[in-house]
Image 1: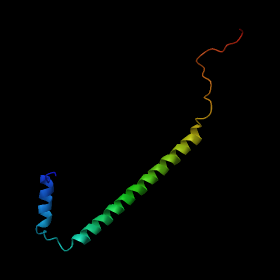
Image 2 (image 1 turned 180 degrees about the vertical axis):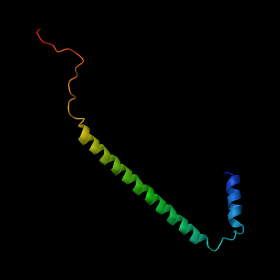
Image 3 (image 1 turned 90 degrees about the vertical axis):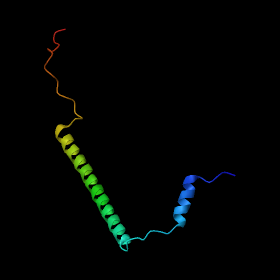
Image 4 (image 1 turned 30 degrees about the horizontal axis):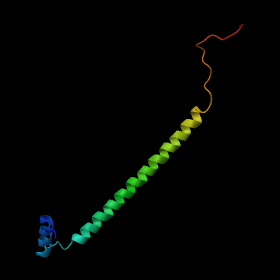
Amino acid sequence: MSFPDRKETEVRRMLEGPHPALPPDLAGRAAERGRRMLRRHQVVRTVGWLLLLAAVVAFAVWAAIVEPWTAPPPTDTTPPLEGW
């Protein structure tokens, strides 16, 4: 048989003792805080999606203007190979 852990004994003693009085409006404050957190997370998520959409649109406009899939024009840095 193992001896009870010191922390476990201390926790059991705390739980068996008198419970502290809670403020009467604790549940309301906790619910309001939870609503604020959910609203904030929803706003952050919406802003993130809007930023992603803006990035996709900006990339599409850039790609339509620059057309990176086409071959680059030939450069004039070397002389043409004629008369070989």
